[in-house]
Image 1 (spheres, rainbow, N blue to C red):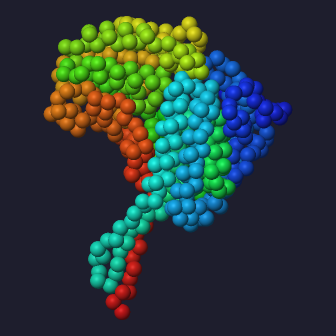
Image 2: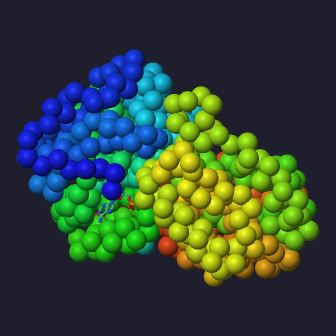
Image 3: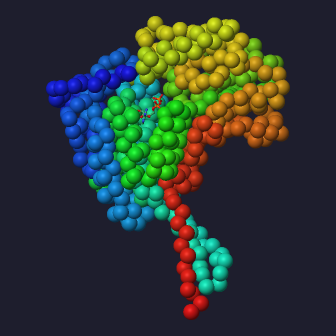
Length: 505
Ligand code: ADP
């Protein structure tokens, strides 16, 4: 764990250890945000946050626990009635202001993200724009929460279905997209009249806290959006899932933690949305446009240094073009420049931690032990323990960890297949079902394969599939629920049936 807990003496955590060189330094917050106020941890403890590119200490953040999580939930509950009673237009106007403030502060937010998360600055700029788009989208969609009138079964009655906010929402988010994973949960929740308690990842609290500060400036009322930072995820998560005032949990993270949280939510029958791990296949058929496929692989495999849940995990290439593809991929990967994300020359940043790099290396070693060939890379980088060399593996098979598990790093195992049936069977041979991609110039094959892949999202001749207008989410052990699009509102709404009777008097 990169975060270290400080016991005892109170840290002066209002002073940054490092100067982030922001246009607006007041965006950097070191406290939790509860009921519209910035607060220390009740016991004044803090945890340290560091830059994954160089290990530099960035600052100490309030380390809140179960008790303060409970207080945040109470604040959210207290704010719920008034927020829900606002018109959708009034909530929309506040979200629009929040969106504008995010855009106005895009450069600062991107800098914060690169410094605490590691991704290149241009990727951070892209994520802020992407994340902001969810706020804009849901400020608009929140005005379109339509119900239905239903044909009643009896003549003296009328039947109506209305949609209402679920109530207090708990959100738990990961470090790989420290901004967008928050906005795509919080924006729809707020838009339909829910209040939120957010626990961001301890690796990347500054992006979350800056978002809360901008929400406050936009006029989000006290208690409507609360942020509880802390490194004891089990304690905070325990309270979020146990507390009966919380009606819904929305989580993005690993499948094991998602399963645990679903179990914990069962005791109070909370609704859940789960965006969990993936094991995306990317199939390239002989009839593909190889230039297009190559660009798609480079983006989907190596973006964020391989640390996204929709990164292609298994590259599955037809035998007729296999050798050419491997040669071209190796040449393209040799052009990458890994380094500090603030350095404009860096095409790729570090991994989130040395442990992450070691875990990736263990998967590569497992593959090699089972007979894989290392075409390039295959080791921790000379740049430091947080960096892993971009790696290409051939002679790989389904027994290896790189086939079965999410790699979450810059490692591309290239599997070989002969027939379309084999490719589909290989792609579906996993308990995961988030994103899948394939490249083919045949229309008939495209429909066949798109419909046969057991995934929540399928990219045909495209790997950049995500935006605020599409339903993002998985099936099988990759989760449930959808984020973004018109469907993304449903995760925060209950359907209430109203029967109007006694009408024949
Ligand atoms: P990752 O491997 O991406 O860190 P995790 O599932 O471990 O995925 O983490 C995603 C989020 O879940 C983070 O905010 C993390 O702190 C939180 N988390 C981890 N373990 C628990 C837990 N037992 N209860 C609640 N939240 C947790």
